[in-house]
Amino acid sequence: MLKLLQQCRTAALGLATLLAAAASPSQAATATGLANLRALQPVMACAAVAQMDLHGVTDGSVTIQSAAVVTTGAPAPYCAVRGTIAPADIFVMRLPVNGWTQRYVQTGCGGLCGNAGINYAAASTCPVVTDGTVASASTDMGHEGLNDGSWAADNPQAQIDFAYRGMHATAQVAKAIIAKFYGQRPVYSYFDGCSDGGREALMEAQRFPDDFNGIVAGAPANDIVVQNTFHHGWNVLANKDANGNAILLAAKLPLIHAAVLAACDRLDGVVDGLIDDPRQCHFQPASLKCIAGQDPATCLSDAEAAVVQRLHDGATDAQGRHLEQKIAHEWGSELDWTLFVPAAVGQPTFSESIALSYLRYLAYFNVAAPSYELTDLKFDVPTFWRTVRTSSYIAATDPDLSDFANRGNKLLLWHGWADQHITPQSTLEYYDAMRETMGEHVVDRFARLYLLPGVAHCGGGEGPDTVDLLTPLMAWVEGGTPAGQVIASKVVDGNVTRTRPVFPFPTVARYTGSGSIDDAANFVAFTPRHDTGPDYDWVGRPLYSHGYQTNCQAVGTQLQCERARVSLDDR
Image (cartoon, rainbow, N blue to C red; front, side, top):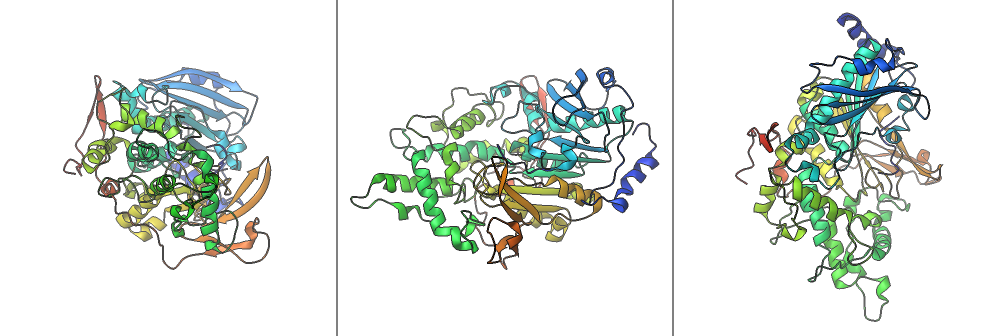
């Protein structure tokens, strides 16, 4: 999550005035297609926010710990607010004090959260954000605990807040504070998140369609249960020998990556170090097997080649049935497999950490098992269904966004093709499930999917990873201009080294045959006649359906959830 800057750039008024303000912008749009909204000044002092009566705004009492003007650093000056929604949902806000353009942007968080900081770096290409004229907020999702999951033990309310309540309650409270501070509620509200923030984004669209007019969901951990158990667990265990030692080490990853590019880089018509659609790449790790007398540093042993294939293909049971999407790691992402391939035998990896965190404290209903080890995880179908029943309240794979779409709201999904953490197949499957459930024409009216070649998890990788998706989302919401081509850039040491157009899926960029391959101007849109790729024939396919989500409540130290309309109990 280091470099992708992708997600961007009315109490006092009567209802009629608010409706007029919301309706008029499309008739007076700016050059970027955004509504030309008047900047408003606060109607109270920043310090007075701490004394606001917010009773009844959400389902928990609200306490404001601090409210003070910050005058240094971007996007100063602003009123910095910090508060708590009972029992333990911490939120922070930034309220412009020199002119608010009637927009609200809420940002998501990553991992297992526990951090309420606003990620302005993630929106630094969006002028509407960087000019300091939007009100914004973020939340820790109900806990400030460690990323090892121990915060969830005997704390069902923290689990509910992390699953879905935290961001919704924050949206309710933030809008109420904005309405009192400026004398008017936001005309437009947006959510922008990546990784778990992408899951939070989809959870908002699925469960709370009134909260936001537009949502950007990047590399969403929508299928968080499968991802943090079988996916990450397989990442580790598929690379172990009979003694529990790692077979493949990170020193071999550049060798593998170079071989993948040699086999597949030309498929998109230009040799540029990127694979535009890795699903077209049919690289065979066995092609790197050592021959007699070959330097082992320049090839793979039989065992190493088998590990590479297993890591690409993903988790299966003993009969070969897939326990996650059929491509767990796309070809072209190998340089970032250090997430789960150690540099030395015995070195821990992130995949091991995240899998154990989840399996010990979140995977099994009302069970905390701090001594659980990865070797306890059985890769079979009964264990799969016993584990993913948790998804009824925490995953965000329900493809029916009818309530969200019927309100005129817009959704931009995006994923890096070289994501080493969350497979792009989960986002592709979700998008296809939306189209199957709601109808292609309906989805085309409110949603777009962008896939970025060579881009790793929420940024980084070899591909252009700096792209503003928040501005085109705003233009679609406010001016009615559907999101289309965006320009992605690669920025190295502050300098742009490559630009490339990115089009809504399934359209891709194709080189014209002349001019620099580092200049977006030399690429045009190309839409394949048929979309080819793996099918979604895996055990968890039913998770991408409507009706299994549940609401939960905390009863003592236990989590109690309603029965889902579509039960997984018979799996």
